[in-house]
Length: 508
Ligand SMILES: Nc1ncnc2c1ncn2[C@@H]1O[C@H](COP(=O)(O)OP(=O)(O)OP(=O)(O)O)[C@@H](O)[C@H]1O
Ligand SMILES: [Mg+2]
Image (cartoon, rainbow, N blue to C red; front, side):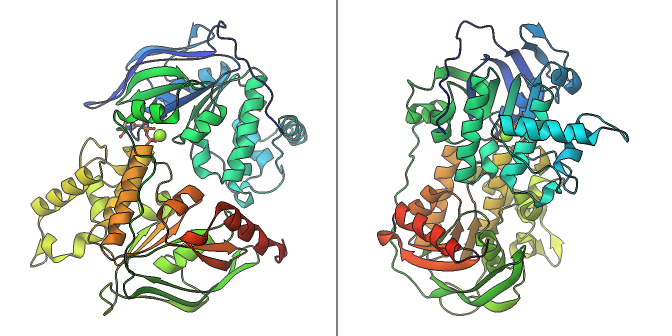
């Protein structure tokens, strides 16, 4: 369905404005006199590095965070500071990156809850409106099943419908595509275009320049809490946007080093997991990865890639089969570093400090203690070094990880897991939520790990990332590895065919 033509009225008064909005956390200025306007019928992208202040601004615009100074205007009228109910009543809706749905409640119940309905509400009428508005906007949802059983794209649609049911006129999206597969993003892009065409004003935060080019009319770029500029997307090449955001040239493609393969580091044999999703079984999978090699694992979300990564890294136990990791020298057991897909669940202790999170694995190392007593100076030096090398933007080593921006939390996991040169690196969606500069850095780290003789298993929903880094590509479909290709022989079309082909044999 082609998106309806849109011609936002550039003379129309803004639907939502920020005027000199400033917010400090201690000495850190998260938002520094930010001005922003979004007009009815317009999609405004908000672009900035990890920690630039985007989520903070969205929280201020929606009343969740009170600015130190400056104001937010809706249709030219100031909103009271830090009052989410007033923002909602004025027609501002937010779709947060971490959904605000109650998992074991249905879509209908979640909407009723959000509407503030208590004990006695008319479930039938809420359900009917949910279905009707969903269909009208091309966002069908199942109203009667617990939302935890729904795919992530459908849960996101419920969040959007929650806003539309309240007649939102402005929608704020904080990295909506970070959790979506490419196909789900395509659907969302159509929905966004249609909503804008119907007169809504939309603010879209994303790190993906291609998404901005595809849907946004204008882009406001922020760096270090300040607006760099607001530009027309149609006349600004992506490289220019990247440069404005980072303040230097960004290489959007990294060179893949060719390394002579070393001994087998990872040996996966007959690995199987019963009923990993519904009644779908995983495996049996047989794979080997050598030192100096990156094996990419491609597949449509839900076909077992994440579970395979969990089994290889030992986060989950298999029903049968084995995973053997050998040191890169070819002798003795090897060490595994794991970048877990869900960093909030598996990778981080959010209330704990940057230091605690960085030391979680290394604390037992001899250099950090003497006769059983920890050596705080060494620990601090080590952590300060990791923070500098991985460019983690934080106010200090004692800051709780919960208060870091999303991308900077991801950098903490990377720094911890890549420290000490693991023999095997299992990286699931390693650059999800990272800005282009940080992606460039992570790719160079994976390449360096490879050049130093380490083995890597890379799971990524981004085919570009798989192609950029992998020496061989395993394609998964319905829980099975349907092919392993040399990167030299792999094309997008071939991989796409294999992803789809395996599904024909499946029952679903
Ligand atoms: N509650 C808080 N306490 C202390 N510092 C905070 C808090 N919330 C945000 N910050 C800091 O404010 C800065 C901006 O964070 P914000 O989450 O707005 O970044 P962002 O642009 O959304 O980044 P990302 O792309 O990584 O999501 C960061 O340095 C962050 O550590
Ligand atoms: Mg953010």
